Image (cartoon, rainbow, N blue to C red):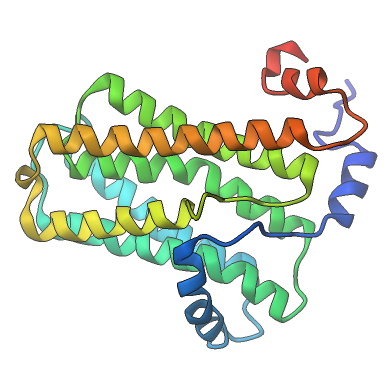
Length: 248
């Protein structure tokens, strides 16, 4: 039985010619850029960008395994040192995710494999990081938890759908975007490791998640509108159909 390749020859050719183009940097990205560039110079040239990506991934996977060892219900109190490690793991992942691309461009090691590996790693880790946040807040509200996970996944998918047509990787909206969300998430984890999981009231936790969900929905809307406005040979209706895999 013949098995069709996941990527045909045309797709592989397009992937090989793909060039990464970042969108307008957000407020925090502008502040952090010089720090990331300086930090990237410390990485030996012999270290591949994919290795840098993998280091950040290993920290988050270890954090998720640690979480599952203590609780799977988002209702139990877990040791403060665990939450502190969650914050460190998130910080390492966020830093490595920023450094891998800079390192690749500095030493001209950008490749189609690196692009796929980076995005392929980010996809499941979004779920892990959301799970870690819900656990640290002891937030077992099924509706808000689902909406939080759904909007994170939707913004990630829409960002790549937008890049597929425009050629630009946009991760911010109105000066606020992914990096700001990551920094706030890291800060909240460090604070929770010191103050304790029960420090935050249910109202504060709920309002915080609602704000995050709203911001993610704005990013989804921005990607949708901007992609449909982009002029290309693919009809707008066909572009919309691509958002529903079963409609293909």
